Every structure is written in structure tokens, then in C-alpha cells.
Length: 124
Image 1 (tube, helix red, strand yellow):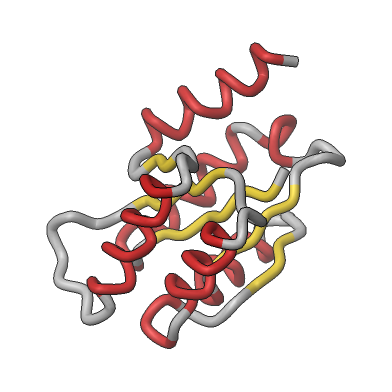
Image 2 (image 1 turned 90 degrees about the horizontal axis):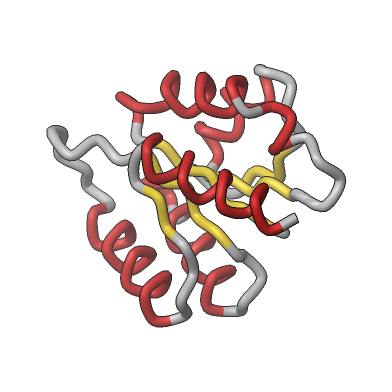
């Protein structure tokens, strides 16, 4: 299962903390992480194997949206900072729209991400 992980600058530490708190889930053999570049660097430094794409402002959000549209990515964890401006907001909205179009689970905060991974753990 491919899971995309993305975090705005103000949420990157929160994403790494979330992944560390749920290491057992994210280190399973059938889980593959893909990420935007800068988030991926932080996640990799925390000891996770991740396929890094471009950074969000350089097209990484759009690359992940493409993976969603191609049905490669099966879940998106995107910790957004709703209080900051983002020059690549159109790419963010496109990603969210494509998750809805292709019925891909999308979590924009840790509480929802926890529900998603707990749901997957329950299905095992």
C-alpha cells in the first residue's frame, strides 16, 4: 500500500512525531511511503524509508496528485497549516479534489490520520 505523506513547513515536526508514534504501522513490509521532497528529507532523517518527489512548491503536490489519479497512491496524509499562506495552493486543492474524485482517503490532521491507520490495522 502506497501512502503519501506531505506536511506544510509549520507541520513537518508534527508529521515526523506522528510517524514515530506509529512506527510499527509505517514500518510494515506492505507499506510504501512517498513524499514531497522537504517533508521526505525530515522523514528520512527520522529513520523511515521514503520515496522523495519534488518539494511542494516545485511540483511535489502535483506529482502526488498524479499518483492518486494513476491509482498508485492509496492514502494521503497531508498535515496542512491552515493559518499560513501557500503559493502552491492551487496544487494543494487539485490534490484534495483528486482524492475525492478517486475515492482515496485523505487526512489533513493527526486525529484523522490516526483514524485511518487504526481502521487499516483493524481490517487485518
